[in-house]
Amino acid sequence: MKELTLHTRSGTHQMPLVMGKTIVAIAKEHKLSWGYACERGICAQCRTHVEAGAEHLNEITDAEKLRLRKAERAEGYRLGCQIKVIHEGNVTLAHRPY
Ligand code: FES
Image (tube, rainbow, N blue to C red; front, top):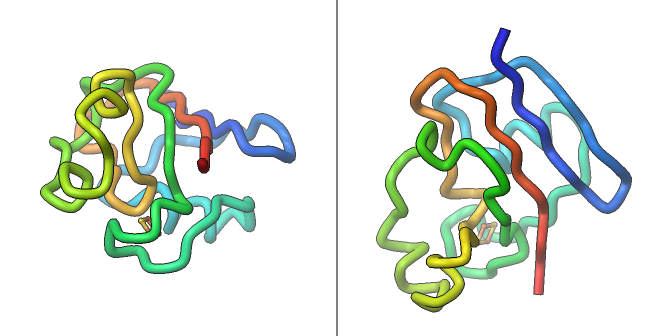
């Protein structure tokens, strides 16, 4: 079974892969602290580093293009409220707010 691994300040959490939901929504369901305020790609409290499985995620959204610098995106940073897993595969993400 494919897994979603989330690194937060409280540790590493592994769970079965869930597709089509944002990472912020999944973190909330599992009561993990994954900062968020707007869920619209504005506050960046949900800033996330994609450590593995980028190819299984949705395309970078327009909100992410506006909020994150090009260099950050090139380094694998995204916004947890915009990321969804859309293909089956192991994905590892880390919450990395500013
Ligand atoms: S929750 Fe505000 S940018 Fe993601």
